[in-house]
Length: 169
Image 1 (spheres, rainbow, N blue to C red):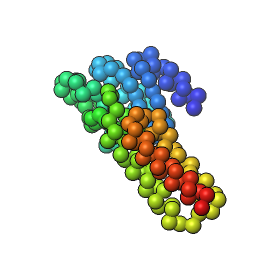
Image 2: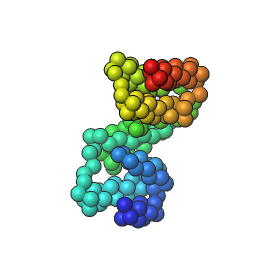
Image 3: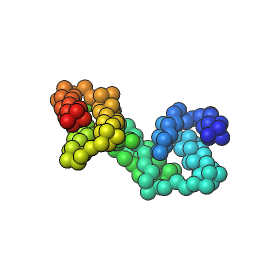
Image 4: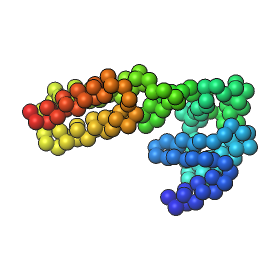
C-alpha cells in the first residue's frame, strides 16, 4: 500500500483532485486532454507494475449533464471509456447532483426488504440473526446518510422494525 500511496501523491501533482479506491476507483479531474492523458498513463503504468489490467468494458466516466458534446467525445477518445449519465450507483449508494429524488433510493429499499423477506422464512440461529441485522443495517446506513424524503425513511423504519421483531421471535 505504501507504493500506491506514494504513486497517488505523485499523481495529484498531475491534476487529479481526488482519488478514492475500494474495489473500484473513482477519479475526479477536469476534462483537459493533458490531464486525461496523464491519468491514463498513470493507470496503465500502475496496471503493468501491479500485474493487473484495466477492464475498459467496465470502465466509464461521468460528466456534468450540461457538459458540451465535444467535451464528452474528447474524454471518450482519450480514455476509451463509455459515458455514463447521472445518477449512477457506486458501491450500492446512489450518486447524484442537485436535488435528491426519492426514486433513486427504490433499489436500496427493495434490497433491504428482500433481504429481510428471504431470511424471515428460515429458522435463524443467533449467529444468523446477527448476520441478518448487520447486512440489512448496512443498507439502512446508506439510506440514512442520503435520504431526506419522509416516505423513504418511514419505509426503512418499517423494514428495520420487522427485522427487530424477527430477532426477538
